[in-house]
Length: 447
Image (cartoon, rainbow, N blue to C red):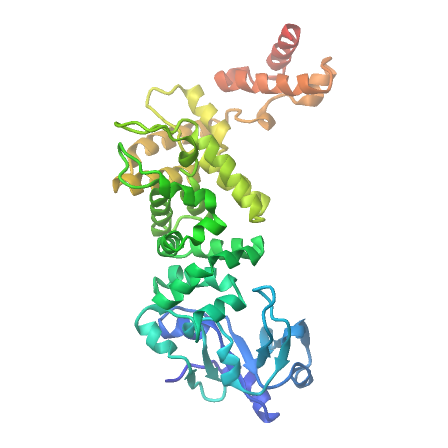
């Protein structure tokens, strides 16, 4: 079987051939081609040593030269080229103690993680090389470790999460022996940096089938190692409108978000939205109660994401959605109540919050109540069109004007601005400089 080599790749490979070397495409683009997924992200492997690769081209960057990787600039493209290598023992379950360069493709492929990632393509004629029955596993929809799975996971514990991620991305099962080794060695994940764990989780949650990987993460107790707060939900069987555990409901909500191709932060919020229930549950024969689980869940989410070294934006946006997912709209809300809702949520977060609500309801009932949200959405649009003041920057006065009117800088100034905003949200007509200064001075007199 042959891979359709673009002409520019053939020309790139010819440079190596003329110099007496061999060049191969390796990595996920071959796997994806075989199952019909577009992927033009090429990685290359060669028997040429890094210094030999450098001598073949005008511009080569030593991006990972200690591991045999250089980046070649070739007619406007950047290609990562790695020399075939053997690796020493993994003392920290993540990084080899040494790297030695070799001339054998077969030996190089042996060190890779899973059979479906161990293909190579000869850049001379496009021949697909499969030394580890990867095509068989692609046909059987299996993620299987190369050789002895325990050895692969002892070498690099992150491969445990990579297996779950590929299972979710491709909707593949994990081969039983591989899965058992993942379960036995799950504690090795303590040796993996939080940043790398976060990176794999984001890719898993952003895949088309996150529930597959998350359910396996639960079944193998891998979740207990990296997300113990989420795993705690398997202990709480819900009643009332729910018919599953807190954990399974959270996973189901995340899958609904993936089914609708919602943004990553919505998917993450869906996964964590009821995480606080396990910490606030009060058991009852009719229906358990979980008072304050939204606030508790937001705090847990914030703690988890900070532990995983997520960006500040991710931490705040995901925890914000979790904190406010329990909003309860009724048609008798006043316009002021709608304005307060916009102020509390932030107009930039409203669409994602609605998506979060749809995930929650659909995972629980099989269908979401779109009509209620659509009614609220129409009212929000009406308020936004009126350009009423909804936040401090919309007020007709600011801190400078208040200080000029005699208010001192400090906590009282901030409280006064909050009071003025509340007055204007209640009655937009009060948003004039004269009226707000009058209200501010009266408010100061009461402090």
